[in-house]
Image (cartoon, rainbow, N blue to C red):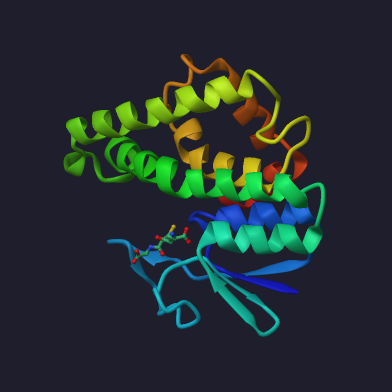
Length: 202
Ligand SMILES: N[C@@H](CCC(=O)N[C@@H](CS)C(=O)NCC(=O)O)C(=O)O
């Protein structure tokens, strides 16, 4: 049984979705936040004191996207393909973590996450400008195939879509990127995604 430490309204959502997609049994060990974004209790299982963390038998992992690669590897293909496609999964996952997530977060904090008085419009605009540049790359890729690697959904799609999810749900302008929008809609309405979203969105 996978133990996902965290709450659905956090990056643990990504791991819940991955476990659902993999069809693996899991339980969520709820560790959340107090007002002020301090953890309610120490996440002793994660040396960074952050969520999520995963316990799989003796293995303990942190970093949500790495956790997802582990979960997908347990399920195997098609969620985690082998060979060159496995390398493409790594490429897209690292692109997500380094090229996409920082800009998503910069926009998100300043567009809807922080209390209104603390939001800085120039920060939101800078995040959007940088994210739009990455979405142009993604739009060109998705013009060639429906999912990142080809005809089928893989953990690469899940990792990227789950990082874009908050922006997609909270008013980011995807109109200039119709292929990205259609791909996001398809990813976020898969049965496994809906099951994870039900835990998060209620
Ligand atoms: N890169 C890490 C980020 C983890 C992270 O920042 N988690 C947030 C919740 S979504 C957290 O625990 N924040 C509490 C804090 O930073 O003190 C991952 O993807 O797992």
